Length: 225
Image: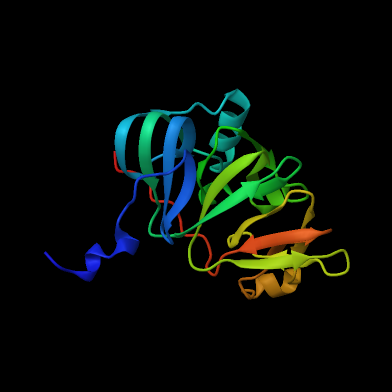
């Protein structure tokens, strides 16, 4: 049988070492030798002796997620084998975090991560309920984090002299040391007249970067009962 489908770039090769690698632009492969954590429902294939279990959020994290609709619906993957992860054919990226690094990521953009990383669901300072109750996940520690993005992401440097304003529905993540606040770009009178649809943004100040995607959030589809 002959086809471009069977090109080497499309064929999964055995892992040479444990951990996370890009399979291609739309999927991540994790060679599990113990445990990793992944977005619930993101596994698309696996081989080997692996078990998948829903991971509890902890009381505080569960309450935040239930109240806001945000958070990290996680599963643990345990055993020995290889698993592939993807979500809606979104673009995949692997981020290496070193000790001292801190990255804020929207829960909807998390795909898979090493168990050596710590995460905490935190309220976005300065946003509160004015910004819709923005809660993101802050990752610290040493390890790899796999993230997804609809389309090609835009990474915008933030400097003390040049704050950046981002649509809260388009932001993927940012350097955790940045200061955040809500910025209104329309007057109240303009909003009463219908507005531009761009009334409120998240303002980021300091020294770091922000990641945005070239589209706004689509409502999550809830499974049928």
